[in-house]
View (cartoon, rainbow, N blue to C red):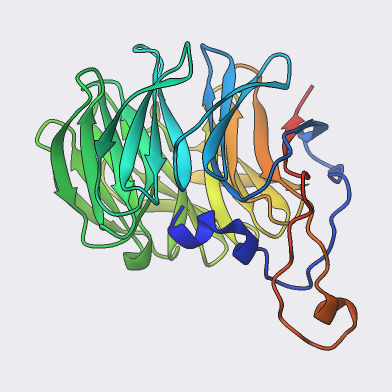
Length: 348
């Protein structure tokens, strides 16, 4: 997410600020609330990422990454010295993680067995979204202010290319067989396709009727991208042609998307406290099956393909005095100390 997304306390200033109670149970759909994982601590959060094989969840929180055991549902470690961290990309075949340190303009290369930092690599300005592309064994750091992608050889730990993007990059996805990495250029309302061998942008595709897409997920088998758009749409795009083939309505303030190849469900998590779940019925048909109630502000999400569970960051926020008194003020809500947690939803 862009820098303003990471400043989550500011992003909470929408509607009437409130202290949100425990997650709501959703009716009429396959997903429901399972549990919450307490994390605590101070500061905002951003990306969550799953290591399916290693059975770990990585959650950026303030200036560190919290590590959670997926099967036990408990915090089992942390990765520190990551100023302004947005998230971590997992390279499971190398047992390495790569963090985007937004305030330092670096990427940390982390040993996922010991959680120790092996080295740091310079990136462009404000690395935000991050992606591991296993075909070339390379990591892409998408630099928000730098409007570029820094490509790192994941094994050697060296920068091999810098790709100009001519706009503000957001979430990305990869199709190894096609030799492509896809990225949302949020302020241009377009998707770019990057050739992973040439390290060059080879296509620019408009996303209309969508606009200002943040989240992205990919269905590699059917060559479909799912884009969470700022105008309250999730669009489905053909990743071979760039044609938008379907769209469905979603909530307000979308950030993340996910796709589950096992169920053919596409997810869009939104700041208004909803996750829209849609089924890919056919290559040109997307149908909403549930609007899952979560918690306000829970706009970042990831999915565990093994269990089909989704995970969202959440916290409680105080009601500012001006709002509570009905004075019409617009003070930003304050995070309740120690209230940060991860919400878990599933079908079991």
